Amino acid sequence: MNQTHPPLPSTEEDKIRALFQEKGAILQGHFYRLSGRHTDWYVQCARLFENHRTGELVGRALADKCRDFAPEVVLSAAIGGVLPGYEVARALGLNLFYCEKRDGALILRRGFTLRPGARVLIVEDEISTGQSIHEMMEIVHALDGVVAGVGCLVDKSGGTAPLNVPLVSLITLNAAHYRADVCPMCQKGQPLQNLR
Image (tube, rainbow, N blue to C red; front, side, top):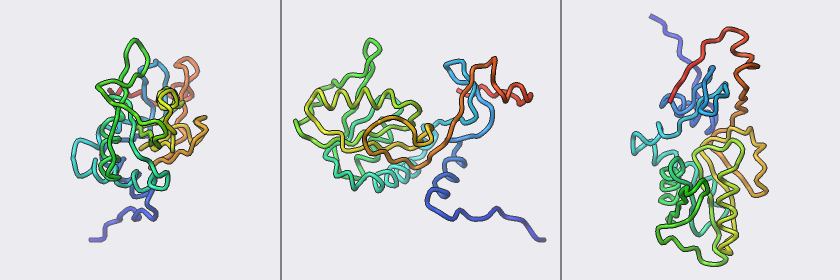
């Protein structure tokens, strides 16, 4: 009996995208965001780290894309950026520092200290507007460090996040988001999924 199989991925990004879809880390459809807006892409990178082999694999893939930045330390934001940051730091043989929210702002604590002039690679799980990246960049600059570059698993800005430093990602999406009252997916009657 003949079976039809989907074509094999042709590029590294295609392979990575297939892995993200297989693990439920990216889904296309009609989704509700915590902000109340609706979007056509759902991204949940935590699903990649349920299995240590998958987490290590995507961490190594992102580390390989960031190697040319010649970083000396990796900086991430809790909670979403810690696991990708850890795996990238491990693949590069570097230390990982991470920021946490306090009174609505990211801060560096837990005794993490940055040497003046240190080249810092900022790693995030996903980027939309780049707000948390900008907050981490301010921390690096305040401590006289240098932002060598930014790496993320999923760039939902389609490559348009205004960072003014080099950015690499494993997957780039043009994720649209809409107010509920003007959502074209709602207007077409597409069912809304509320994933957490």
